[in-house]
Image 1 (cartoon, rainbow, N blue to C red):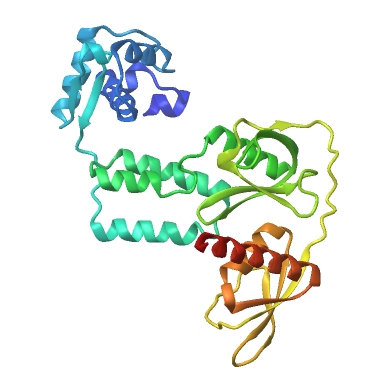
Image 2 (cartoon, rainbow, N blue to C red):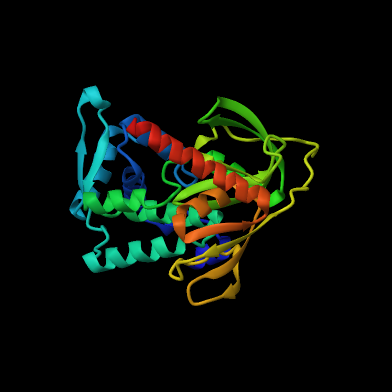
Length: 314
């Protein structure tokens, strides 16, 4: 300890190298099954080891771990002869109630948490899942996050672009027109209905701010050196009546007046599509009053929907 306090370096005099290398091996196998060549390379690149190991020496470390309660098996030659950590005595022991509480807390905070923080928590859940043997729980923890199927490199690039308010070009797989390039002034990442969206201003969406599904972005964004997009989107202000007092209001909605049988609501939105979806989701419990142009658009959508249903009956 005195030597370490003086030099701040770990040396052969300060550790049991058999124990240290056994711990390294355990950590490496905990991530995934590994071949002898992979393990040898891993030890060569370690900052404290920098030396190769033989098969016989590897067996010494495996025996040390097995004496601690680990079970390690070498796979078939056709599968790469990889060493696999089947079980170990350091698994997390969580009760059913603890698991339910953990999932409940996560589902609550995911509604308001920043995507960057959510990414950190998602990585934390992935680490937890490595220490659990219950297959059903492992799958639950691995799939609970809205980020579960997203490309982490693309996501982190978008987080940085939004933080700097970069103008970027993305390759977007549009459900209507296929893969196309979109220029967008990145503002923020949002979560809606358990899906992650990139929000910003784009010349391809002149009437409102663009909200693009991150899962449809095919490649890492390209940052443009010169900004050409200006922030000139005027918010849409809508007045409507809601006839069901049990409908909860969203952050961009406020009550103007309140009667026993209805509420007069003002909605301020920078995305016409999402606002249309919101109005339609309330069905007959909501009627748009102003502006007249948006009221007519809602009427046209409802009329078209009615015609589609009538056509099905004929």
